[in-house]
Length: 437
Image (tube, rainbow, N blue to C red):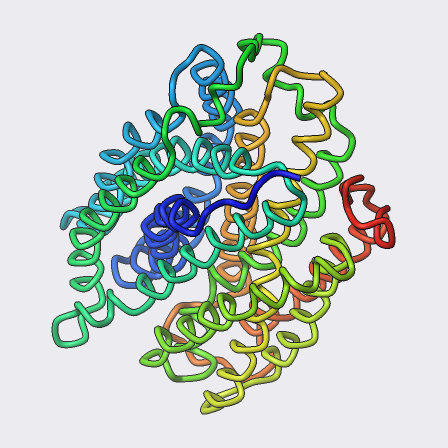
């Protein structure tokens, strides 16, 4: 067992999770509505752009992870990638929320360029950031504490991202609030990166393991040769798509089904606040029954909590707030447990000598899968809604196409994820004997 990560170092490491999460939420929640509703770009076009750019961006993630591994093994610091990513994240976010007054075609091109810059910067920072976190400790339970701390910082960032655009809006103009948000985000991003640099010295960087060999090109795909990793990815993608569909559609649902678009920031705040509050519960639960069973329990809880959203209608704000709270607690399991299981899988692979410290490569594929989740959610949900005749701003009753897409489909996907997880051989061998699989 390795020593516990000190509180100061843990806080410094986790700090970057806040601005990264701040950047992520507006992209997959506000961008579809901003461009598809207020700017008049067809929903099918917005969905197709989100899907195509995400898929193209995902291809680069294993390469970025491989590059990070080679830099680390040759004595460099993974934090170099974080610093290099800052202008891309900040600039891409500025582009997305400062669209020009132009034709639909020009707006679509502008959206594509902004997405490319934001995604590239986010990937460069996140892949190395997650790899550093996995290498802070090799203890089975301690690394869950690391991922939970990072997740908690991320939830705070999400809460800020949910509240600030509305708070910064002038006379209810959310587009103006988003423009101001993209500027406020810059100093927060710089401070988070600075805290990471202070907390992770060169000697602590995972890259500096004595005698570490630089990965070879054939090691680029080494993670896919790990059977446990393939199972983990399959479960994570299924569960992730189920979570990403509501995230993509929530503004439409709140506006056109509940008739309370003004409460959208509050609903998002409730969801993520309870997600943060629930993480200590899932850390404790994983210690008792193992990470795999705790994750399955969280997925089941999300289904029980969220399925009722399909029958809500105009004015059911209180009921939806309760659903947001309960499903938020369940979401805490998604934040804390899968990345911790991934770190266990990386450790097990490294122990076999199957690859030369492929930490970055693993997290590159992990980033790829996260983007695939969001891309599939947008690429499936938005065009399907357009195909069945849904027009943003048109009120819908309970059980309509928007409600079914928002709540019923994600619950069905979560149930499929639970079934897949039940047979997936992903539990760490270092888990408590009573729960090992």
